[in-house]
Length: 144
Image (cartoon, rainbow, N blue to C red; front, side):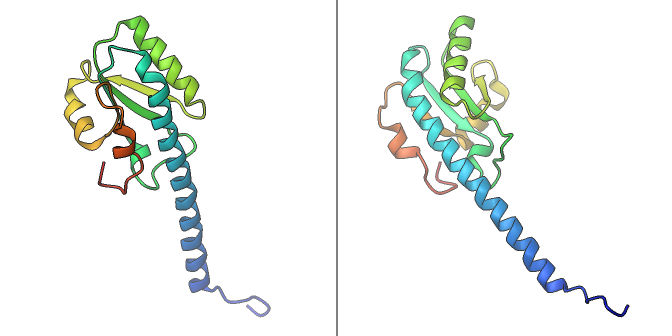
């Protein structure tokens, strides 16, 4: 073993921790950017669809460090939309959120997890409340 340096476990551990922290920071920056983009898209797109009563964002965009480059944006709607309205809305959201794929769910059609979305998701739009963004956007985790 002459000529070989000893393996430094402490240095390796510190390197791995540093790498994980950097990955978390990158994921968190992506999540914050996505969350701001979602509120912006909701403000611009959803008022054009009068049958949408409320919209929620849920999933990885609400969990610190959980979002990655391949993550989608999960949005749930309350309201009755025709197939044409649903696809027009989905297309408009995808256009506004062009960096991400949008997964659009109608809560009236997905009753099995509607209560979970309402409880754990963040309200991003309410037809009767123009101030929903300032009350809900970008608060610390657990406050949504």
